[in-house]
Length: 129
Image (tube, rainbow, N blue to C red):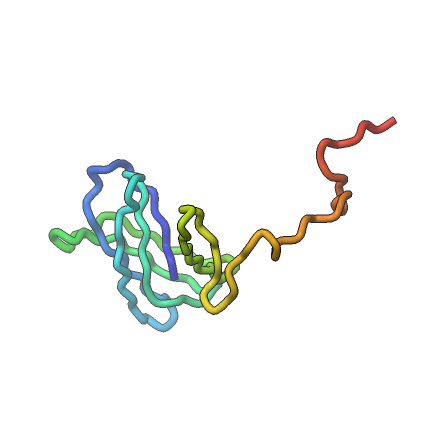
């Protein structure tokens, strides 16, 4: 599971996340890292959790294991897989995106969307009477 945080600023201490499932009392630790280039963004990765269960989230300082923040709520959402893209380069320096185990996408394999697109017409929009 991936958990994203926005911190108050770049000076916010490094931390890890501890999630406790309320019913089962199971605890999971998530490693957290700051996002390079975004000083207030942090992401944490750990064990997959069940949707809809109440959980206790605790943000804990790496430096001295002190509690920085906590909250109790249920995870409500839809889990979608994130495709991984590989970029291969040629002598031209152009990248060709592809998913692992598939053929690279080439201009010949990409089809144009027929016009008009449903349910709305393609752009520019025609004027209506």
